[in-house]
Length: 380
Image (tube, rainbow, N blue to C red; front, side, top):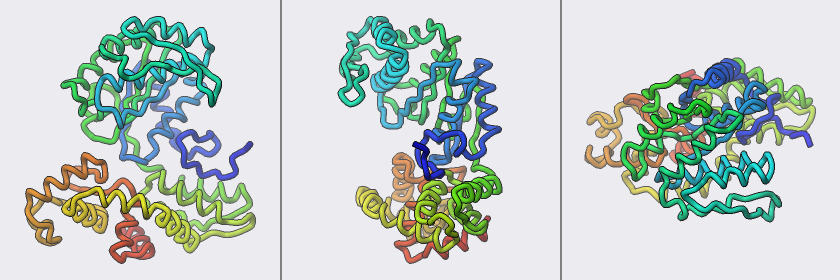
């Protein structure tokens, strides 16, 4: 069945509904097909995962490579990383038949891999438990050796690669990169949102917001194709308000599109209504996030959200101007918020990647969507 809403909020976007990124796609495909590993950098929710999946479906990649994607944001050790990679390699192998999946399990000499069947899909399931991986480095070597000896090359995308630097084991990031670089049959895309990835010894693609005019044209065309319309000003204002963050624009327009009847017109009022609805539905989630923070962390987070882009947060003038208390407490709060990925940093400027959370906090402080709309439009 054809998807009736063209504004996808998942990462698997059909090509006809994928907005631009032609140059970025070409850069990644060219690098990969020439055997080069790549770093893909951008703030969270800018569209990295969607771009990777788009590259996977490119005819120069999809038919020629075994493609697998692993998100390691919630891993904390090499054991968990190895388990996650093993699961994905098994899934990819099993897609070619049970015998191929069994062949992969046979090479894992350090563990006893078994088959089981998923009752939901009736397909093979990776029956290995995390605790069985007692020698993760050895097991990882076996997995990589299997991939290296495959007749078809592998393309592995590792999302939130910077997480490896936080593993229990020391120097794991350097160790894995060195090991990966020796492989001839496996190419990697390291995807992440922390700038230290930029210093890795490989090619780098920094993902910027989609060009404003191209996104506006894309959005209006999708409405037109469905017999609806949305004003140029409404899409431009939304783009400025969300600062080009793909996920939040798509999420908002998904709701606007769903609420607009065929033959209907949408404008700024409809965009505000959609955003109010989305912020209301996220209210409990955001309240729980704030409830899990200390008072100092909540205060610093709120100050940054209200400012939008807060410069020199750790300076005495900023702390005094916002009555934030002791500098050491502010520094600890900032460090914690960065670790929780509730704020991001670019040089001395701090901001929220979650634009809905930012707008929700601003609304709690009496700053309406209309006021934020005008403010961002003026900045743009």
